[in-house]
Image (cartoon, rainbow, N blue to C red; front, side, top):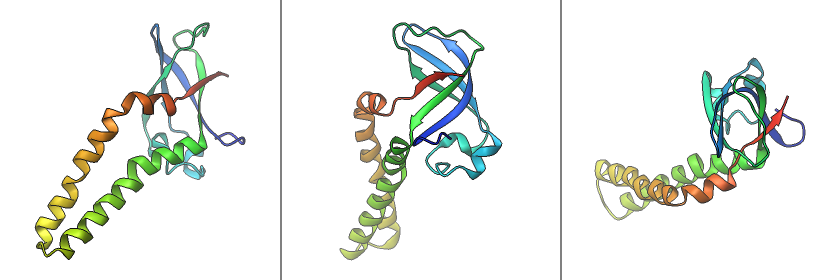
Length: 140
C-alpha cells in the first residue's frame, strides 16, 4: 500500500492487447496488516488477474514486473456499492416485509430476491463504473 492514499500491488504483465493489459497480482504478506484489506479482494489470498485499460504510448512487455495502483477512496466506494448498500437493502426489505405481516420465511426470500434488481442495475452501469474504478499501471 502506498503512503499517498493509494492501494498498490506488485504484479507481472500477463497478457497484452490493443486496449488492455492483464496483470497477474499475488497477495503479499503485507496484505494482512493493510488498512484497506477490507476493500481489496487481492488481500483475500491467492492470485488475481486485473485488466487495466491501455493508454496510447504505453510500452509494456509480457512478464514485466509492474505496480497496479488504485486510489484508496475508490476502494472504499467500491466496498460501499458491493457490500454495504446491498446489506442495507436486504435489511430494510426484511424489516418492511415483517412489518406488513409476511411470515419470516417469505420475508427473507423476498428480501434476498431484492438483490437481483440491485445487481442488474449495477450491471447496466458496468461501463460507467469501469471508467470510474480504473486501475493505473506504474513501472517498478
